Amino acid sequence: MKKITAIVRPEKLEPLKEALFAAQVSGMTISQVQGCGHQHGWKEFYRGTEVLLNTIPKVKFELVVDDGQVDALVDLIQKTARTGEVGDGKIFIFPVEQVVRIRTGETGGGAV
Image 1 (cartoon, rainbow, N blue to C red):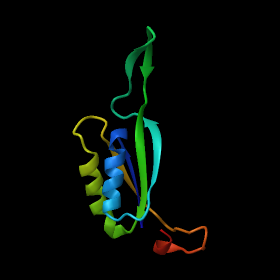
Image 2 (image 1 turned 120 degrees about the vertical axis):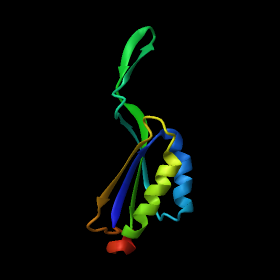
Image 3 (image 1 turned 180 degrees about the vertical axis):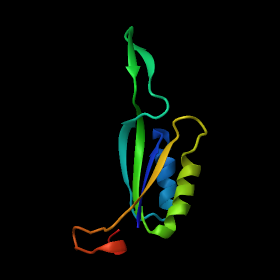
């Protein structure tokens, strides 16, 4: 099993969620997060005062899937979330050693 974590633009929340449901992903966790990458912030003016903004809003998707699903889902996330501009986000893939369903105690892939 693998955990896929994708950090994407907020406007890609609904399109990516719908694409993942269409791909029959059994579940996901979605969080609103703040971050920065190559942009490292910029300056804006708020009520006449210069303010340095060094983080921007992003959306984090987390999925735990079977190893065989990883490549197809990474391709799907890339195609859905890509705009071609700086700030499109990143995808991280981690190994998952074990999953336990709290309610039943079921373990392994069946617990996902």
